[in-house]
Length: 144
Image (cartoon, rainbow, N blue to C red; front, top):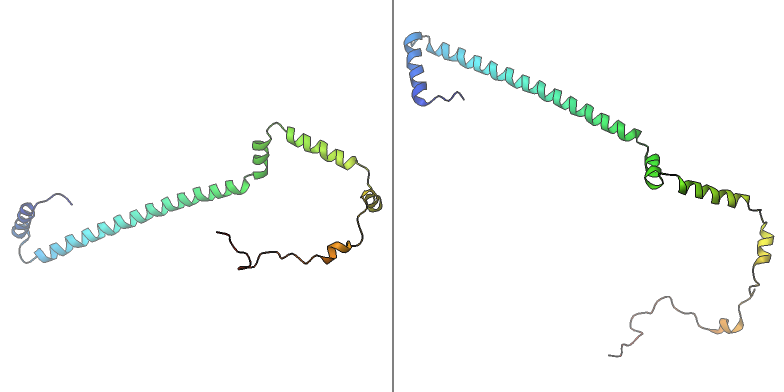
């Protein structure tokens, strides 16, 4: 962590043993380890707060993007992409106006305009056997 070698750690321990004394050395070691634990806890808490801030910032960005997608006018964008000058829209309006201006013909007039269709089935068609919709397997022989 600090780049200390075993020789340097041993020298620090020897000086601590001489300066603090063998009787108070365990108490000093406990105090130092407690301070290290507190420093690590504060660093972890700080990192957690930074992570929370980053997550909230990301969430607000995502919420903004979702709101932008909700407000997106797909119909307008498609119309602008397909018909930027409005010529197709004008043509469709002209055709629709022309169809709306056509006179209404009741169904009786439409039926009169149709050619005469036979009302009954001709007798020769009634004698023909029905044709199957598919050929059953094994009924056709291959001429290989």
